[in-house]
Image (tube, rainbow, N blue to C red):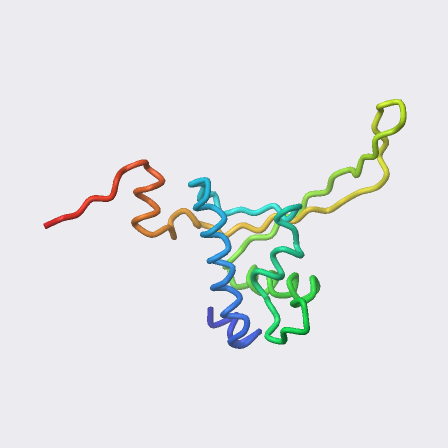
Length: 136
């Protein structure tokens, strides 16, 4: 976090905490604490930038995709996330039902290493299917 603080200031540190919140919220739904998000619709780069780097100015929509990629690169250098890019063909359906390659698309995957280990006790118990217990 110190590295992020030095590079991006307190807004960068706040972005990291929001990134953790996004991952926690996203994976708590399915009890899947894999810790990776493929940035493709509906969880696209635009979605992530608005979740993690919102603008303080209500007249602005949020930060730019370039700022998001800069933020993620700093987080990768700090060891907070791992970024992986996947290239795939863009396909268009033809009138005869066949598909034609019309270009390439690069998808990014953001992973928080060891994310499952970061789950709190409640999430861990819930993930294992155990009911909450109280001790006396």
